[in-house]
Length: 100
Image (cartoon, rainbow, N blue to C red; front, side, top):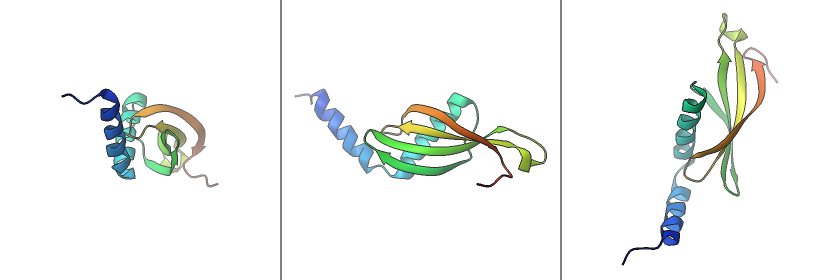
C-alpha cells in the first residue's frame, strides 16, 4: 500500500530538520551562486525562522585593484528546511577595506 503524500512530506521535513546547518547552508549557497553568477565568499549570519532559515551572505560584486577597494555586498537568503532558496535580497554594499 503506497504511503500518502502528507506522510512523505512529514518524513521529508523531519529528515531536513535533522540535516546540519552546514548542509542547509551549502545547498542554498550553491543555488544562490548559480542565480547571481558569482561565488558567495562567506556566511556572516544564520538564524532559524518559522519556515526554515535566514542567512546573511557576503559576495564580491565589483573586483578592484587593490582588493581592499573591491565592492562587497551582503545578501539575506531565505531558505526552506531542505536548503532550497525561497528568496533573497541585497541589504547593503560596502568597500572591502571598510569596517563597521
